Image 1 (cartoon, one colour):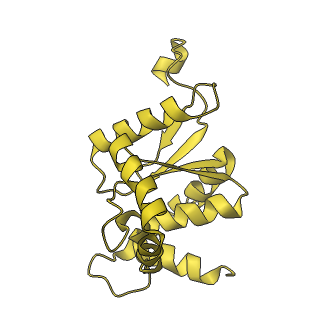
Image 2: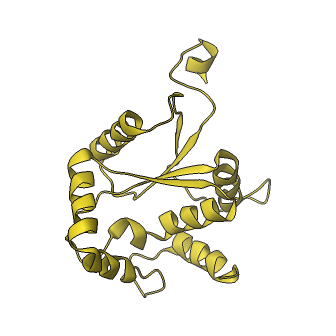
Image 3: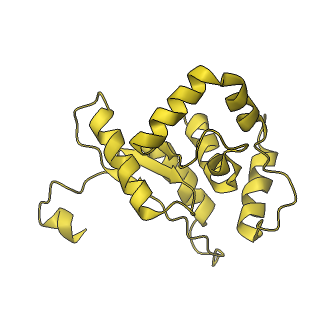
Length: 169
């Protein structure tokens, strides 16, 4: 807010919601965002909303975190999914994140646009895997499992899963 009040060109109304695994290193996030900016057709300067998704128990006053998240994704209407996976792996960890899938679902539900970003070296490997081993990529996507009994599933993830299961489709 202070930078915006000072007239900085580096802050503004968010135009892209960034969805990422909480395990994603900051350096990889920055590299992926930089690559996205350099390769996009739109010449307007993007403003990213990097949501840390701090889930808190609602106090009963005002909307809860899930309501704010749905509203944010719906208003921005463009989600950038940042991947940090080697396509040779047997699974795609970002998509095993309940939170990321929740954000993607609400992007689609709001009629928003979805883009993918990753560091350049991984993007080249990802594109090669799509061309050379599409079956392997299909297998990796087919292994996404949000409903399994994972020891990492916490109360927040259970809330997200409950809401997703209550939705049609």
